[in-house]
Length: 337
Image (cartoon, rainbow, N blue to C red):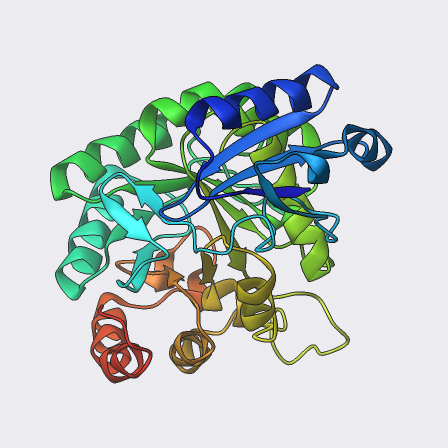
């Protein structure tokens, strides 16, 4: 429920209402604005009804949040959320490109790739230390060694680092080395992991599951926000359909839908969305046109010897060309690169 207070309501008035909401066993939210103070009340709608907040002399309006996801809903927060990725703002005027290898394989590979993507204009780097793979015989990542390499390289080149966390036990370790968590498609509905990440304040890039509806993604984000972490970035990375021409089907419909229904920033991963190197650039441009706030792109210093996802990873020169080609699309969208 959203409670809009009258202009003459003071902070003490708001606190009194928040206390009343909390005393009823509900979760209170305080959202001061430039013209109006807005309160939120989350919980059992039957209990909310017994409070009769609409009768309070300092309450201007009471509106139920109809979406099942409350905290991520644009009904609750009409203005876009800006997520601070260690000095890089995602969701604002700047279009943010995060690029790097699928997996951290060595210091030299990670450093070389990081230098290349930064030179081309990437604002943050990615690299997986833990790799959940379909086959148990595929490269699973370097683990803690990979995190240490990623952390070292990020500091040396001056880019925030994004890396995947795959289980609850690794959260503190990843948090110590990275600027943001990435939750992969396979873990989108790992609710214990989502709750644990919600207890952190480090940003979370939450990828859509391979067979998940858009509303499933929003409900997964709700788990993180409900634990107190507002710093969530939604990621469309393609879904499984009957089509087999590409690795996944990149659902660009999801971008305007997510932007309409939620205040959270949205990035797109065209690397996993297509699985084909030559298709990454056109789908990246399409993502800009659809209203995305950024891109997550796989780049490797030598994809021919990559231990993970080499076929969809761009060569550094291809990434540099893509960044140049993105400029008019980003400008047309009213943003800067």
